[in-house]
Image (cartoon, rainbow, N blue to C red; front, side):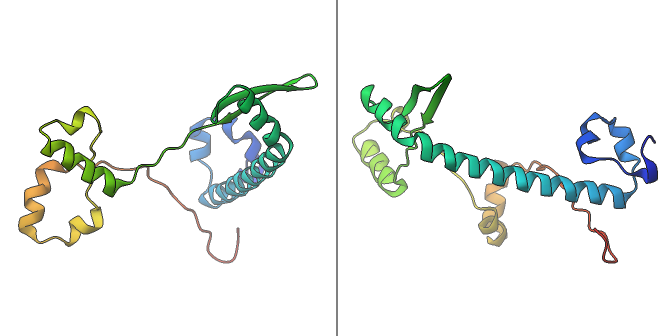
Length: 162
């Protein structure tokens, strides 16, 4: 191991072979995990702070550029000195689910296929599924497939360290 006392600096971790990381003691892995979590927290805070400053500096110019282009959303480009600023304001659309369901029923009643107009997605709450009586669960079982999510590990050092 090239590091004294089986310790590795966090910024060099991505350059180590996985086998060397695996060989580190659990307490060192716990320290690295804690350091990485803290670095990520700080990076997210820095990004949020910088984004806030960029919004303050450029939001009005971006709004004016979109107005000039006669659009409410999308990309606006303008310059600030030697820098081209690309401001993207995405459109976020939400649909009222209850009203859509009523509309789907009206389309069906008129003899048309609502799938020509809307995408229908059915979901079952896993919590509700678990509380159903067995005969109902059995009816739904052929429709259900379970895949594992991403496994995570949290390392907690006992005895007051890390």
